[in-house]
Length: 236
Image (cartoon, rainbow, N blue to C red):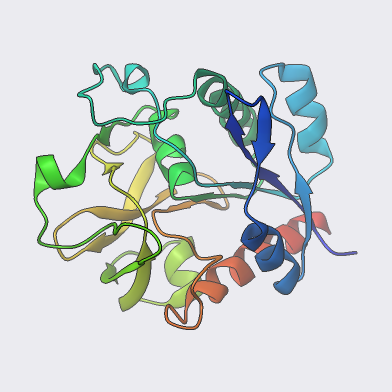
């Protein structure tokens, strides 16, 4: 049986609609999993029952997290704040870590792992850290830059140590890393690009989008492949 992968969608508060890019579904299927849209709920009972039905969880990208969750006021650079999504994501992450199921956080998903486990964010890279590395471009252009994978981790297990090319769609980033996490990849400007939980079997956050742009960022597929393989092994 193929592993069932829950994918937490984003949420349009004005339209009261969930949404999820097809690329997440395609990537999971291509790597041998069965995608399942995970319910957005703040109810622990619903979350717990949904987690029992999946073998792994992907936290997808989206808008910025309210800085109140890491003890800061909004500088005016945190955009698209969505209280319902923040609250749901915080509850899902807490219960997923308690269940110790494999989790892959992508872009906002990595930031959510960090924030809701006790870390903080840079609210805007260009204004706070400069532009020596381009982390985001105006759509439809895509920024690409290099990272250095520097520590034994789920990421190095997937793509190996050393320098890799990634896509980049973000203006925020990890500032203080959550207590149970460690950095495992950085950009040339020192921005943290990947984190992992030091005490869980597979809790990995990557700041880029491994489900996209695989013809250029050629190691992206290996990350999803590794995640699905861990989920498949956990299913046995």
